[in-house]
Amino acid sequence: MVKLFIDFIQFLNTLAPLLTALGVLTLLAVLLSKSIKRHATVYYLVFAVPFALVAIPFIGRLLGMEGLSFRIPFMSGLTRDYIHAGTLGFPLLVIIMYTGALNPKNPYVKKLLAIRKELSILSGFPILTHSLIRFTSGLNALQFFTHQEEYLASGRVTNVLGAGISNFSFVLGLLLLALFLPLWITSFDSVRKRMGSAGWKKLQRWSYVLYALLFIHAIGIQTGSMLNPRGGRGAHPAATEVSATESGVASEVRSAENQGVQQRTGDRERGGNGDATPSTGRRGGNRPETASPGGSGSPTGTVAPSGGGRPPTWSFTDIKVGSQTRQYIHIASLLLIFGSYLYLRLRKAKQDAAKRRNIH
Image (cartoon, rainbow, N blue to C red):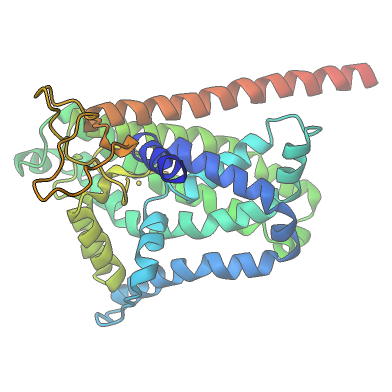
């Protein structure tokens, strides 16, 4: 039963990675709310480690230090999750976003509200990691608009509309970074106190613009990659990452992607998912179908090995889902998340306005 449950979670993670990550992180945030509040600094340090493993080699390369890299095998999966924001960064932003739109009297919402500041700071580490690697993608995407004829002649585009949507979304990512940085920095108490309550609240209103642009960014990458499978940027994003960092972390990313890892996150920008990619089921990928005794090819029918061993058992990971179907599911997930948030936020705004009228 436990194995079946794990297989089911892995299947969901492959099929709808953003929704799966969002559910898991929400549960962990509620369960660990007291711990996060009491030991916030410890959590900040833990979240900062994967960021440093990516950021230091990246910055070192910009400064001409080519040999600066870190190779920590057991951290490779986590650094990939940081690079592709759909596993950690984007879901954390969604949790923060929803917390302000839900009923504050709900006991679970209360727990999230109590650590909303801490979650904002934690989200910054994977978001900034993602932004560092994708920054060059945004700059490269500008070529589509500044030198379009040359760009189209290079053979990197299979669909002009799709390439335009993808490149616009990558350029929009640069604006998102510019919006996110001040919102993140002012989440720290020392900065917030210096700003004062009025100034801080005024700045935080820009978070709504951030959420709106984040939706456009994620949907645009998904839609563009469906219309233009090459992504509108020529080489596969993995190559961009390697050229951007040329570090041990980037090598881990390239190695994993060669094994089919690119189907995993919801934030993710490579060929079919947004940043949210916010980025794939590293484990438990679809297994080859086993022939049934009747030759129908049903995944439930198995044939005992010729050596007389135990026949393989069926699991959720045997279910095959096409890449295009997953892309549609990613887009549907984004529409569900942002559509429901907009509904909840508008409803809460009406309720708050009604309360103020009753008070006066």
